[in-house]
Length: 269
Image (tube, rainbow, N blue to C red):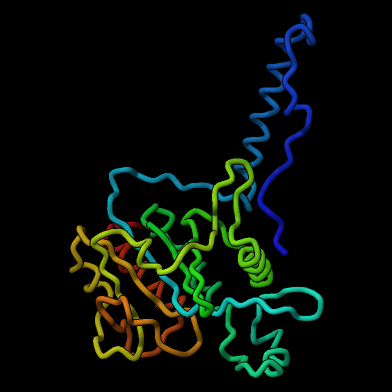
């Protein structure tokens, strides 16, 4: 399991003392306490595991939304504990359950999320929202400023905690960093959204840089990318269905192409 983000505040800082209790040293005590508290704030900001909201220019009105579809995020009780099922560790368990191990690739989801969150596009504050639609029909909202674990094992632990508790919150302000939200995902999309599905099987082959350059800034671009090893995304709510390469690409590679094209459109270096 992944440890919750946070830092313990010394009990001495939680208790406020009055001037009568402190006597003539009251003012000095408050000054020292305030300095120690500010040091704790600086420590929190320097910790690599604490999510920090990137500075966002309010004049930037345009952004992008990503939906990772058919994400294989499923929990199973292996032995005496719950684990995120994956083909590398649980092949025998899955076969005994009559399931195809090749369909359980949460590592694809992990790589796809990192491809989005690590991009200059996200660091510039242009990622409006990121949603994950799992094969179990669960919708997960990922805040753009959250820091996902870099290692796959820690990512699995985080997903188990999320799916069991339905949310992951930040210590302090209790902001929801990851949370399960109600279906359908279209209810959470802004008005005037253009939902674009991507698949190698699409007959509409486009140069992604030209495609996003021609898109109006008045339209909210929503890219739906499959986060599974095989299969096709749900086309039920898609407005346009395109392919961005003559070759089948991984989800992470496809997302990197989209992010790069949008960075060029919005002149993000």
